Image 1 (spheres, helix red, strand yellow):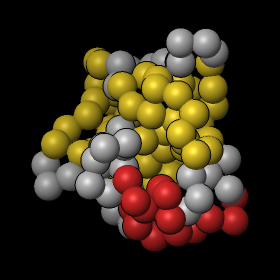
Image 2: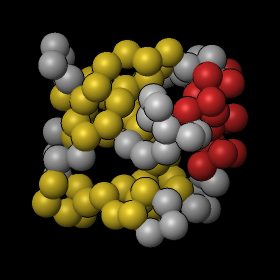
Image 3: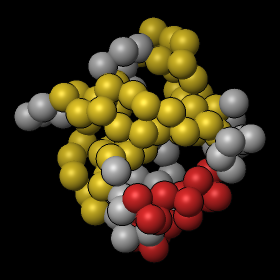
Length: 101
């Protein structure tokens, strides 16, 4: 399963160990194909509306470990996991990501 991340789970950020604990593998840097908004309240929050292409990272997570990430992100009450199109330097990918509820 591909997962697009944009905040504290990214490489060199303080929650990246969560992805490593879920046996995640970094695939590529990328950005959203459609425009959204990224705000920084207590945590980075991705919203479906907006006018910016959001940069982040694509990670591969074994499906049997996605529940670990869902729990960390508070899915489905705090963040909700949904599907999103991502552009990398080499290709377009369909990924899961977490939008703020």
